[in-house]
Image (cartoon, rainbow over all chains, first blue to last red; front, side, top):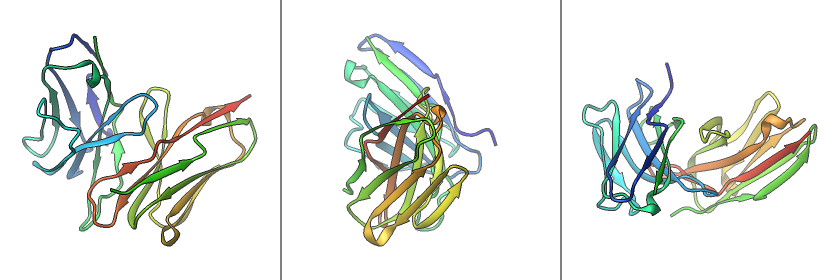
Length: 116
Length: 109
């Protein structure tokens, strides 16, 4: 068990460019979460998957954001036409959710995005 | 949605001191976790504690779900304990964790 892995760890891009982040969860975990954290704040929920199904999206996830988990394993988070306000740490977590519960979440090291 | 309040927002200690961090939440929960965010930004699991008391070395945690609060105790603090501590809760009918704003702990030598 190698833990949750995120790539890239750091991304600097110019406003208007597209960026994609990848998350590899703990292998036996069926749930995968994306959170966003800005400086001095707690992480904010963006979206989550149960296996390959995207079951909930936050209103924070504008039309420029899209997330996929095509085979129920790794996930990607794409941001199109980046804006300076998108600069943040993007955190991925996974859990083995039991019936009626969330399970214990384990986070990756995060992907830090800077939009110039 | 559920509200999560952590106190104090900032705490400065001398090495060797003890401290208590508090997490209040506004609704029923069936999931509560404490995390320590390291200097590189990763959230490190400390406790999964929707109710009861747990201990792990110098750290312990207690959650009283009926009174909607949780406490994290740090004894004999060390400089490596510095960082931000987050409480995160999951509502009974919910599917995600909601985080508080964190407590910034600084332990001076």
